[in-house]
Image (tube, rainbow, N blue to C red; front, side, top):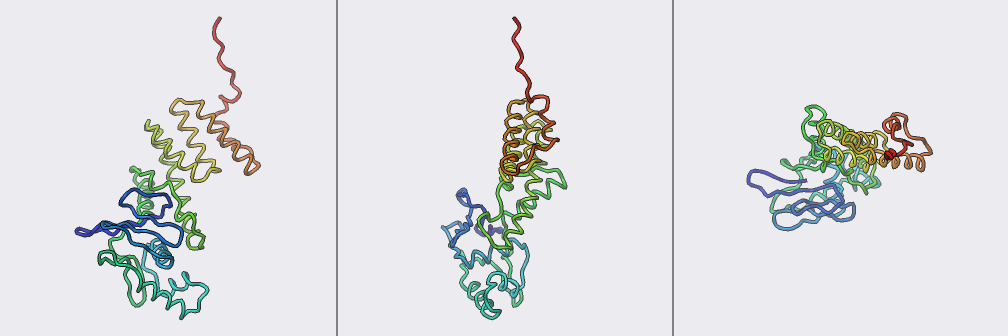
Length: 257
């Protein structure tokens, strides 16, 4: 997430486990995450990290009682409420800027905060509604991939399906426009996101064929065929096999004597 304003320093909290570029924050699925600001880093401990992540995933203020019950499910109501109050009190204020806003009934992220997930969702919406450009870098990672909480799992799967559909659509659109490098970048990102996803492999195969690379199309098909056979015990989808049917078992052209 990133705190920004006309005269405020920029801060960012990212849900990606990979090492971010300088100036981008990092949320790690461990007992500490780091937020990079204009003057160093701010550590968020486990309770604070989970609190901020939950608020980011909901994209709106949450009732205090709901928040305490979700984050401390094994505690009695009064103890869970005390844990929430303690966590809120201990939250850091980088350069005096609050991370969240608190009312007697609700807790939410501070105004002006931006989140990688929100940017990705906005990009997907723009792509599907307006056909605008979409930054693949916003769509190539899952939400908090190593977290196992139910409230994370639900959001992760919902966002995964949206981003994979968006990547496939971007692959096909870029290919149709002759932007083959962009098409393959998007298509391969979809395959990496879900290796058994037939529609993602199909988009990559079509992109290779559109670029005039039948050998690479066959290689992608063979990868897909072996994956579904070894992992699922299934044959390739007929629609995908038809894409390369004319290339399968095709003899090499003989040189004229």
